[in-house]
Image 1: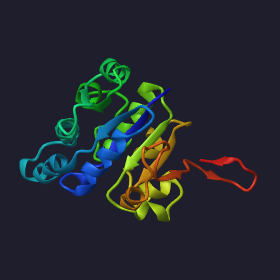
Image 2: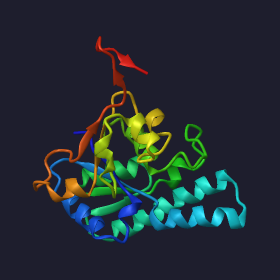
Image 3: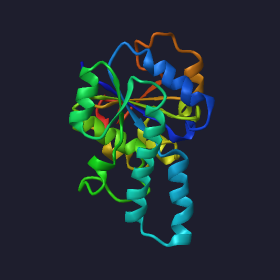
Image 4: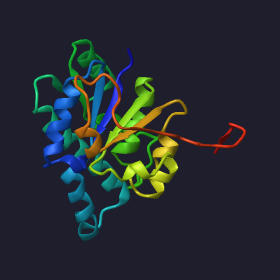
Length: 212
């Protein structure tokens, strides 16, 4: 069974929801890979970029390293949460019946198909990882329920709920779901289905064709 890629938003760091989501994910009856957001570590990169005058290329690398840092925090929460830095390590952790926590820097810093821009966050990197793993299901866990007002990924990007590169980074057949605090309150355990709302990638015309 192909794993579900789950991006745990850095905005949950320091909040009760972080531990509650991890407890929920630990009950999943299907394999999954956790992708950490950047959290407070990425916030420091944003704040210091202006005063230290470093480039977006440097900020991009530092923000990815921030994901590594939050991932290390997540992996400490339970013995089944194991840090993984490569596809091989991810697969080894899955085979062992544990949950990989992806530390992305080794795979993504300098990757030619990942733009060095603040438009690329852990949202887009999660979609990128789906393609590397050849899996077609992605869950973005957010610290907001504003996503319920939108049905398409392009609209979510326009509202700033997901990053601007996500529509382009998603594979054609990737099923995108988004969940927030409201979904967390209504989940049945053990987790047997993908929580949250399924998001359309494209707008359908009256004839049923996909409009790009």
